[in-house]
Length: 251
Ligand SMILES: Nc1ncnc2c1ncn2[C@@H]1O[C@H](COP(=O)(O)OP(=O)(O)OP(=O)(O)O)[C@@H](O)[C@H]1O
Image (cartoon, rainbow, N blue to C red; front, side, top):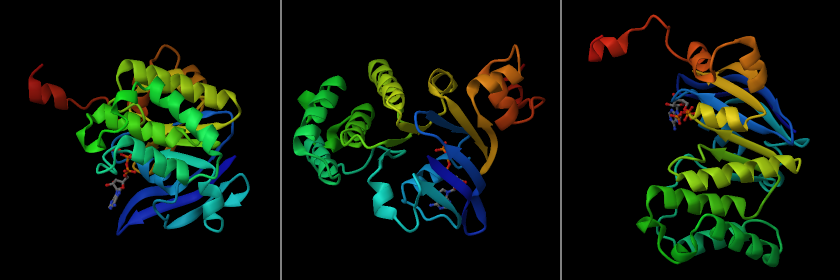
């Protein structure tokens, strides 16, 4: 169980995250939605200790992140919001680096690595520098690196970004299978169809504040006849009487 309590992150006088409180149970796919700048990456980066929150606490399986940072980190794998990292390394060198960071048997990691590299069709590119990869290939390389140690909690920041339909389909199935094993998958997305297909629970953020926390089914049931897109835009978007598009493009 992940317990986020009263989490706030300020940059100068800008509040990126405003007193966020929510729990994420194991066995769930938990999705974060929100417009650009809403605070999704800030939340995920706080969970993986890339940024220090201004105040509030995160407790993972009873371990306080502030006090037991290393123990918590070993439970988590993370896909950042950009795949443009470690570009000077080949994909293989990058995966070696990730594998060494987790305390697992080499044989287990090796077998899982071969399976993931095969699944994402990266075998022929393993020894090429990541700088030479397309955006989607970089995303696949980062995903393989994150998934190969297979810790309990996956935290994936916009993981389908740039993936071809086959890779996106396979990743969704991996996420479902991980949650079905009683483990935890947390991800952010701008794709409402993906959120509807995958999420057991949703958090919708708006300007750093939590404006919905619950299941997709409950959200749809509370707004009969409306699509998730319409509901989401009513909650997180501009007022519906906003006519900016007509102003730009004509009626
Ligand atoms: N290093 C930083 N310095 C200053 N402000 C920052 C920094 N990182 C994020 N922010 C601000 O924090 C707010 C939340 O950003 P965040 O990256 O969490 O949004 P997001 O929901 O992930 O957006 P997107 O969908 O565009 O990825 C934004 O207003 C952003 O400008």
